[in-house]
Length: 365
Ligand SMILES: C[S@@+](CC[C@H](N)C(=O)[O-])C[C@H]1O[C@@H](n2cnc3c(N)ncnc32)[C@H](O)[C@@H]1O
Image (tube, rainbow, N blue to C red; front, top):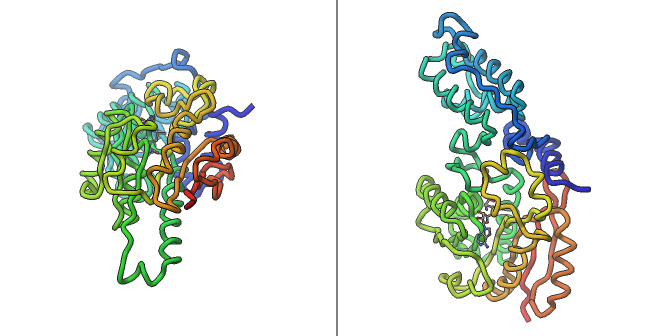
């Protein structure tokens, strides 16, 4: 039987070009999934790092510290021990990855303050905190976003959801060519349902400079983080952030800029029965409502589809990230709701070859 942890682990650990950067550090990738109560956390003593590496603390290098914490993580059953250690050390040294540190940084002894900071962050990882929360930031496409528990950590496959919207917008533009460039540049209105940290909404704003985005989420922590990230990235002028639970009655509030070109969502889509087998990192730190899609994983998906016709322009599109079992289920649901002027245009695969993204389009009647 398909299990989310197996699926997510496979998804992230095979072929994606960003493999090295992302390996295991998206918490769903962590294989194993020890239950929280069984994680054997054996804490090293605060002073043990410096003592074990050298009698003279000033001679501890980045490489020494990476090896040291890798061993501690391994001893404690922390997944992706090497990568976790490398990310923490690089972060403290002001780099994104260990590989990007130059030889001088690698050779220069760490200061006592740096060692202390590494130790503090590593202790959080020992508690199975995802690296993204440990560092307090993570990259999504070209953006560096603030991360804070329990707001959902954007997963690497969701970058492709953004690309699908951008591609569709360029296709529309080419189809109407002559109208779009250089005289009239389109100003697409996009709605993101379930914005979390703002990763999708802000990437779209950054990739489509004339677009405007309405970003909504039912969690205040998510809405606050999206707002903070929008300001940090100076994208706040083109985003309207709403703290709302999406429902069949949401249409009026969401039409503030008129009919919408694209609805995009990475909704909660894990089948409820699969929730318990998610990894400790997820179960302990992330908002489980961000993942739990109800018995069939379709609770929010169905609301979005039912709402879409009253929000979209004619030929407007919905782009959804879903579970690989959902494309057939959505097709059947649309067949059973023929009153809705929606058609499943395409199913796109993720970087592991699993059907992951749906393009549903509104048909003019
Ligand atoms: C899987 S997360 C996606 C977050 C972000 N879009 C991303 O991809 O990183 C789903 C988000 O939907 C929000 N959400 C869940 N149910 C919702 C509802 N009924 N109305 C609005 N937002 C909802 C959750 O709070 C969560 O932030």
